[in-house]
Length: 633
Image (tube, rainbow, N blue to C red; front, side, top):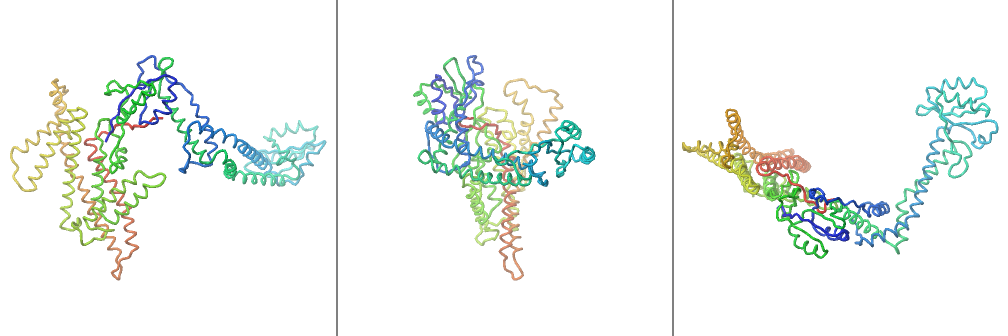
């Protein structure tokens, strides 16, 4: 059922804005619209440009509680003031811990950088403190492209005041150490620059102490220190927990989670202001849709806040399309999932959810009739409906699983084994044609119900052309009923009256020539451009309509066909399970049932949905509505 909604206009003074957005609006089901867009004709209307003051506090509490993640554990219900108080105490308390973690992360990064620099030089057997003590020599660590390495060696070896010590070639770069006299330093650097030599700055300290010993020892020391710090950082959550245990006199884990929840809600409530607008210097305005059942209570409470609320009696002159909120009985509500897949009903359009719930359950149960497999589907639905994040398909599986049980009892099938008590066996040779006929009769009934629902929707929309001359209106219904009557005459071998066929064609002509006929009924002159072409197109359309009625009716044969195939496939499973000793192999039976439930269950589910969307929804349902969202953010 589509709930009635009312368009409301809320006006108040600027000092009331805080109470309205954080106290009044969140308590009601209100779908806000952009006031600046809805009231664009009023020149005094301007957007509320307000910075959200809760964005920064929320970011702080999110950082503090990040180790906890998203959790459903119990948390305290705190007011906004209490949440901010907890945040301030927690921020001060955790500030030192956060600084400690930041310092450790910085030290680890420094050690990792030092290790990365020293790694290519670990093959050199030299003492760093000795290299630093040279008075007349200059030492430079660096690297150059491997492609210029050989040329560099030949050139440098020929120079008396330069000593070239290669280290290692890695990732296309040759690492080396260059020694030169300080007098020749400038000339040496000029020569090296032509060889694309890049200087590497070797760290002067390792772990806060002067770098002494070989590059290999320095690398090992830096690597070990980085790993030690990393192990400490891996326990940062434990560090926070230990601090939290010491802080129980100030706040608890539940306090922090409660503060996060409250600040999220407060920030979201403040965000509603972007839907509002200012009018004049000291007043604001909100517009939106409210659930009709809550309007009276809202008006009374809004008066207590000193607000002016105007509720529109109709939607004339309102730019926004009314949003749609579905509310169905508990047994039908799970099938809103299918309705939403096709599209929510437009406001005022009949909600097809109850129709889907009944027909989909019926079709699935007929095509997948088995007591045992139905119980498995029911249990699967029960399982998927529970937990922190229940699946929307879970409740649907429960309902269709029970339908399979009911029809399984009618057909006498338990995990494919045929029981003696079966009132009706669809796969018996004498019942095959009957089963297919029953499926067609069911299809005829569903088509007629769909056409009736289209008439109801056309009446609501006041679309007389749709109601009278469409294939799913009066003309289509009369033609279809008369075509069924003609088929019945033929099946019974009775003589068809001479007047019957011409009379049956009249509603078909009405559908083919609906445009000029509608204009005639509206007392307008028909506009037909090119009579010959128009008649030709009308005749083709009439033929397509007649053919589609036949195809749509025959399409329901698949319901009976799947009922037959299910029984036949399961009989094959039981046949294959029999061994040489004429005893049933339980493994074959279990595997066969699992395979049938997985494959045939999926196919039957899709086919039932196809019949819903293509054969039924297409006759009466448009589904162009937009979702009602409480306090849209």
